Image: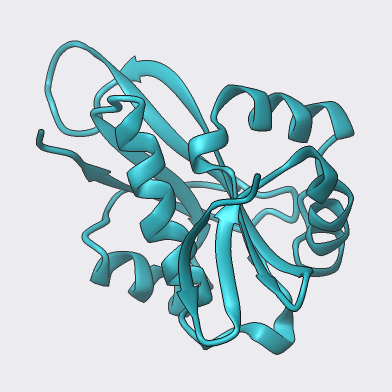
Length: 166
């Protein structure tokens, strides 16, 4: 059963289902240079369905966000291992951008990661993607580090993160 998490106009934000994965892979191929194996999508859906979300208009998936959890050194505390959420990928078809869908996907995935009691959430974003960087900053993410030559094409990424307080 599909549960609608949020609605923006005619766009519905809901949790991903296995039947959505082909559409998600197609969106990934159209919008991003980084691609993943079928198994990778399936494993993220199995691991963290609370933060693997789709945006849908008229029954057609037009965007998604997928996250995973991991343990590692905190981006905020000097010492100690923490449970972290990681935004692996977020994409929206070009014709549906600049409508608040991306922001809503990120907001809802934040809730999903918090359900799993993560201490923080982080992501990597191309340094040239000024629009996304500004959006994440407005949402409370801060730039923690510049990752040199992070992407295959040699472009740097910003590591951006947000800390949760429970």
